[in-house]
Length: 134
Image (cartoon, rainbow, N blue to C red):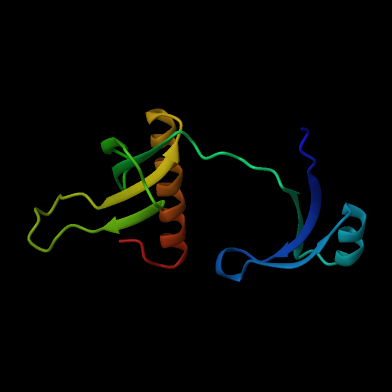
């Protein structure tokens, strides 16, 4: 049995917390017509009824803010994906690293480390943009 899919065109605007979908259309032309001359919107193509399987395994990656990998561990199962930041404890040595603890789905260890590093960079960019660099 062949599975039919449908593509829709979502008009989005904003970024991060300000991101939102304004409207969804059956054709790209209708989405462009809706936007008109405004420069604040993007058109995203979504395929409905298209199932994309998750990666084969869940991974846990501990990484310093500088990008040094401290631990990579394949997990037997995972319920979620996350990034947690932990500064050194008050009683830690002065040169103790700031750590990021992450969990994600990836096909292999290299993929997990790549995803972790991309999340690290995004974390640092967001922190710096918010004036939280230490």
